[in-house]
Length: 482
Ligand code: GLN
Image (cartoon, rainbow, N blue to C red; front, side, top):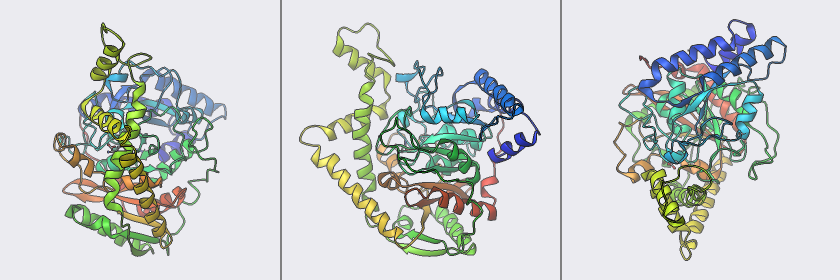
């Protein structure tokens, strides 16, 4: 299976056309996705049209930067004329009337959309099991979860059903499935990538980003989506660097911080061994490894789940059965319409979060919960800033364990929330972070997480790329049979 960069180069050299590569991928999806459930919708006809248009543009000398490159898109991004379900019964019938900004940019750059990928309902989850369309399955072991919420995007890339994909990350949803499926995923700095047209879960945490086979491919895709958007009030107007330009720079003297809190109780032995070996690889590459302290790491999960649930209860109030989305049959009156439409349209995890979030925001409790969580959030950000005075990047495991069996945490929401222990503080602080394949534990991929300071994506990609030049973990692929 070729990487995105290889496909770009092959198209430029005329070795194959976009129609040929798109057709191959559609065939592979048809042959293998029945067992893996990575896609909710495959946009076959549109993909072939876009590929033909890309080939024509190239022949006319008008190839955009992503000309002819096939991509999978998480089903949380609005795509004009194509169902955008957020893996919810609520939006099962929703055909988006416009493109999200990142989708428009990818289209203008000449890329081809293969389809819309499976996810946890409204991006709430860490296993893809809350999807209305059933879970996607981990191609390394189909009885295990692929991670979530961008599980379908991770599976599509890992199983060779797309060279790269878009995901979103509110508390780990790009990095955790990337780790579980053995691919590379980058969560950009908050404000780097437009959220316009990306269905909101928790607005102060959500960020879209690339998922691919390598850091080099993530750089290529990030280049296509990053940048200011006046339609997103939290988008930051700041120049976008050339993410490919620094990939090969040496990392001699790079200062990598290891937070002692990330290597404490709760970390699986197999994961710890892989991460230790990856850190040794960085030492060999010339990095200097320094212990750092993130003393407030322990409060990240409670702070995150208050903020995320409060914001989702507000964001999801728009799904009321009136304007769009699921509407119950024969409502008695308006109240009955609201109640039954929402009761029927949302799954259990979404309801749990709306209820808790509504409680946390209710009069008299706002200060005790949401405001308090915002204060904890500040402490967590301050910890990172103190660490970044001494180091360039922070490294650790992406997840405490490798992919767990389907069903294992489904009935225990708190156990599921604990999966996010190493990823969510990054969202609370708004920092960029990448997960890259670092080895295996009992045949399952393990992800190394690198966290950077604000807008330091180029440095993260450079450090990840150098690791991938020295190792071949990211090139391992699961055996995928129909
Ligand atoms: N697992 C986390 C949650 O359920 C993160 C999800 C995400 O990043 N979208 O909220």
